[in-house]
Length: 136
Image (spheres, rainbow, N blue to C red):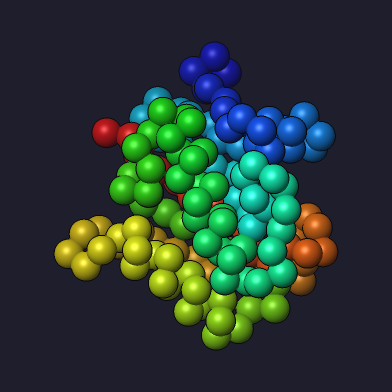
């Protein structure tokens, strides 16, 4: 598997990788796949109880991880999967707000699967987002 290159952004990303034995991202040629990013603050490790803040933080962490893996950020994302505990209209509204900020009208719209789940890795987490991107 020498053609695969794995990445973990400094700080929380590296700490999570060591503690839970996984990688934040893998690069396969020009493709970048990210593990689920949550509302865990990328520097402090703190999770806000507010779902809107968790979604905003997950989007920010995704941008950091894509760039750490050599990509340019959200503009290269073509596929999104989001997992939500207690899925409701607030989750949808906050996701759409963040999507519109990163994919303005007239640009591409990535595919998006929006799923409700019973729980995530920690009880305080309300959202986890995975993405795939092409670095061209």
